[in-house]
Every structure is written in structure tokens, then in C-alpha cells.
Length: 337
View 1 (cartoon, rainbow, N blue to C red):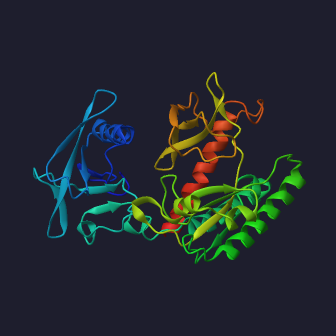
View 2 (view 1 turned 120 degrees about the horizontal axis):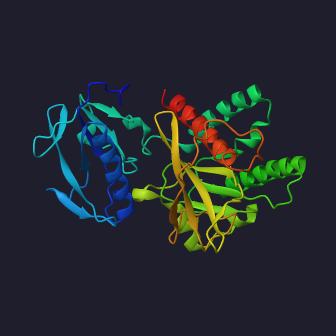
């Protein structure tokens, strides 16, 4: 905030279009409160057409958050009660496209509109990430593969019309072979698998795990329907085929599979959480119905590794996660630039 808009006093946070996920709104209310504790006035705004007046939502914590409709006056956006922000913060991934109400406004808007899924591709991001990881690996003398998954991109795929399947199968076969060679090099006794995902969009949609090309060539109707569309009805016509990475973290008495998600503010690693799914395995997508989240507060700063401890001990494991997060942040910055 101090870098983007140092004189800002009012912050407008643009929320995602759904309100059913109360835990998302809980997180957003926490973000709003962080700004308030920093001495700024912060409000939550919505792009939804059906929200025409302030909407109060009771949260699981007992707090109440308020979503307000946006209005446009000239080259500025504001809320109905004359709340005119200095800065607009997008917490909406723009899967449905760039809304006209935000185009050409004079207020500082971060991240920029071009960072949304309507224009962005995962394959572009990973091209930048691979370059960053390669540079980083050369500096610390490690194999870039240790911090960067292998990936290939395949365009012009139509799952409903069964076109582009040959390209997809060919790339899956090629990637699985590349993974197997790395497994052989490092003595990893696991079966390689690949993640086929929509090249744009998120939300755990348009994604599947495969261990052979036959699996993408022989999709049934239900599987094709699942892969054909993503969030906000986006049609999947480009896919990213990425190396699957086995999840080795578990949590709780039932040893549920868990994957770490890292939180950053600016370029600082501030903590994170575990995405947990009791019904999924170590080579499955955990971003699915039935998942839950566990806090992953970094008990120690995790800024530097403990050289006397094992690589997977605390805080070294979390330090490594933080390194990956910072490399991804640098890649995203290059992508936007």
C-alpha cells in the first residue's frame, strides 16, 4: 500500500461474485480489518447485479461483514454512501471477464485488470516461473527440477467434440516420460502422473489426474463435461499438462492428506494454511468438495534455515515452502511486466 498509493486513506476491496462460501467472506473481512488496524478505512464492494443495496452477511465467527454495490461516476467508482476510495483492491479473479465499471477509472487499481483469468494463462506464468527457477537453481547449484515442475501446453482442445485429443495424448506421453527419467535419476520409486488442467481459471474446476495417454483418449461423457468448462462458465479450449507432485504432508489423528498454501504480504512470507481432504489420496486434487483448512501459523520466522536440522524438520520445511512462494511471486511480477 505504501508503495502503490502512499497517501491512500480509503480502500475498496472488490469481492468475488459468490456469497455462499462464508469462509471466503470471513477471510475477506479479516483482510478488511487488517487495513483498518493499519489506520485505513476499508470497505467491501461487489460486482454482482443482484446486489443493489448494502448486504449484511453473518459469518461463522459471529462477525458480520457488509457487501456494497459499486457505482460509477465519471472516471471514479464509489459506494452509495459517498465512500470514494483512493485505491481499489481486486480480490476478484475476473473469470467472467473485465467489467466495464472498472475500465478506465482514475483510481489506482491493483492488481491490474490484465492480471485476471479473462486474459491470463497459467502456461505463461509457468514459462516465467521456469526461467526464475532456473536462474535461482544456478545460483545455489541445484537441479531446477527440485523447485520447478515440468509442464507442457496444448491448445485447440475441445472436450465435447473430442477434438485435439491426439495433441493432448502426445503431450501426456511425452511429459510422463520426462518425469520417469527424473524419477530414475533420483531413485524415486513412484509411478509418474500428470495433471491436466484448464490453462485459465481456478476454483478446482477443469482438472484431472492421469497416469497414461489412454485416460485422456477414453474420457466418458461425465469426464468430458467436467473438463469442458471452468469457473464462471469459461470454455476450456487450452490446457496445461503439468507434472504431478505427490503430497507427503499429513495432519490430524487420521493422517489426512494435506498441502501447504503460503500467504504473503508484499514480498514477505507471513504464514499460511493447510488444505486438507480426508477422502483424497497423495496423488489427487485436494481442491474439491469435502476439503477443509487448518491454520499453518509459522511458529518461527522461517526466514533462514536451521543448518543443524534435517531438511524436512521445522522450520526448514516451511522455509522451503516460503522460497517457492517468493520465486512464484517474482515470476508473477515478470509476467505482469
